[in-house]
Length: 443
Image 1 (cartoon, rainbow, N blue to C red):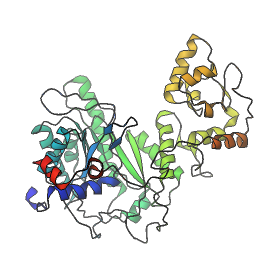
Image 2 (image 1 turned 135 degrees about the vertical axis):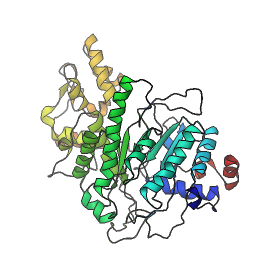
Image 3 (image 1 turned 120 degrees about the vertical axis):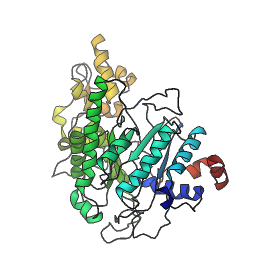
Image 4 (image 1 turned 45 degrees about the horizontal axis):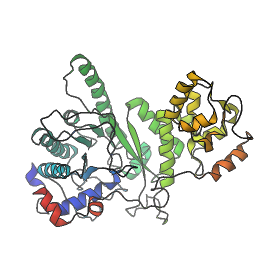
């Protein structure tokens, strides 16, 4: 099978092409899995999470993030690797994926592998090659670190099942929010083909949990769960439509994460938005992530944050502040009496600080200085809270007044929103790899 894959290209050239081509896959964080090394292999998997990025304290927590191949039989209009594009094509062999992963891991450059792919010949053919790589990595090289594989829609269910027992996380890209948009920009793909492997993974995970409860040594199937990705801004869906799709996926398929990828114009096509020079809609992506967080951890529902009359997020205020300003009749909240669910809805109070408040007030009444020590962001919360019946300052419960004051408190946006260009961490730029030392690593 592997003899049909292009092998005349150097490993260095392949790595440059296929790591760069993987940058449009954003769904590459891990969570919910804590599998320790059993003493017979290399690497382990920590529940703290892995992503291809730098942590706030400067630690590099990175994955080897590559495509198996950028060959593709599909012609999705938004994709740089579409079949009609004149780009340099490359493919790894299973042995090359294993060698790269092990040698980069041994040198402490990476903590795991994120493996996506174009479609070489057919979904089954491509996934068979990916399975061969992962199987060899786990069994021959005894690699016990984190592995995330993107499943290709249209792949046989048994093949998905086999790969699921070797990986920590699996994801199937939804690609676009609606079936209509998928038909417009990716006519070779269908919503049904995408949702079928999602359902298969969900059902097998539930079946596996029951087996583990009965037989403790049963192999684990996709222990870190599954995720998906949607491209934002390539098609005309509103934030309201997108958030409802995400909420439905969380409820129906028990996804761990929905990732939102701001549309990057890499192709010229009449079906795509015209290039304006403004770059990807990163602020919109940021607001969707904030709202997604509210769905997953703050017990909000999509219909509370947006509706058909107000279908898009406020670009000036985060979704939680915006919700609070539209529901001032529920404020101010007395911090010493409000239940946990209501505390979660107060701007400036997070999940941890809400838990601390509930626990601490059993010992006595809390004051504003106590809230600050618990991590409450008082510059936001002070407009929505009372302590012992009093507000922190004399404040009008008025939407315009509070909005003006909140806007004077600048929101801290991630670097990708506040001026930086769309760019992923590069193995080559940030680690100063050259052809010579990459070849030395893999020998």
